[in-house]
Amino acid sequence: MRKISLVVGVAIVLGGGWACSGSSSDSGKGNGGGSGGGQANAGSAGQAAAGSGHAGAGAMGGSAVGGNGEAGAVGGVGGASTAGEGGASSAGDGGSAGMLDTAAGEGGAPSQSFSPDQLPGLALWLDAGVGVTASAAHRVSAWTDRTAHHNDASQTVAANQPLLVNEVINGHPVIHFDGLTSEARLDILDSGSLRWGTGDFSLEIVAAYANTVDATPRYGMMYGKFAEAAPYTGVILFGNYPSGATIFTGSFTQLDSVTEGIVSDTEDLNDGMPRLYAVRREAGTVTMQVNDADGAVIHWGTPDDVSAPGRSAYIGSQPSTQFLIGDIAEIVATAGTVSPADHAALTAYLMQKYGL
Image (cartoon, rainbow, N blue to C red; front, side):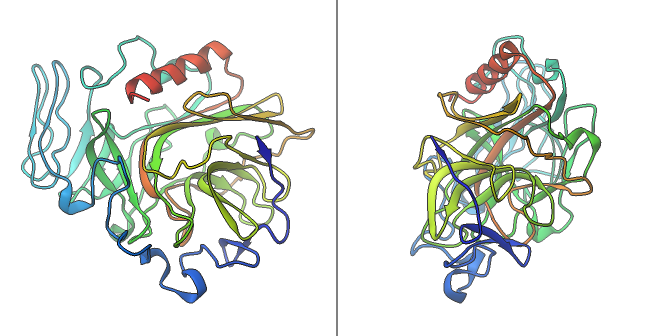
């Protein structure tokens, strides 16, 4: 476990984008003035992350067949979708614009009766198998929140829309963010249910990422809602993280850029393999875990107010910087106190569903 203090000369925001003092900026402008987001290690541009199950739009293919009582998922590029018994076909040849709604059942879905909507204080629930609006080219313009708060994620700029890709993690679809060649991002408008104050909260994300330490973007944002001005107080979950001029390959949660940052105990997470990333604050103690393993635990005397009123939440990057190269399958967040039993049930649900 490491606690790092992000002070001047470590990680600061320059011109609206994060940068490492004394090193090149990860603001999408590239290393040493290079091309930035479209630049990668030799031979890596356009390649899929190891274990991600796809290698860009040209390789997303095949048909998705629903199991008994479930709706077929949107077909991949050049593929068709077939409904299972009692299910309805959702996409035609090559996919079509519309809502994707895949019910739980066969293909890696949990068999237990628990559902995230049973959690008290459920603030956000995004599932790539339900409520995704995508074009025929599989570009995602909207991702519907499954809670009653309607914290829907959206992107109106086609060039910045991530991709819907089927059957990637244990048979389930993902939202793919290609930070190498695009500024893919989804935005969620500010709402009271996403202002978590100084109280308890939890954020669990099933994701895979492949940002490298050698080429921009060297680290990417899975989720972030934070103040515009320093110390950028809020909740941010990164894949990879900066410390001085060095980029580490663990996951990192920041509540402010000066004193409150917590790093996963595990590194080498940027291998494109899916994992469950979880961060919780309970009575001032912040815990970060990867795949439900015992993780870093830090206690701060005075908790930050992480509400960031008036600021949108971002998924996949923030505007013009911190582009994620990877996939997100599901996001579940709660505000307020949640019992250890409910936390355990949520973790078990996500671990079983995605075969983690």
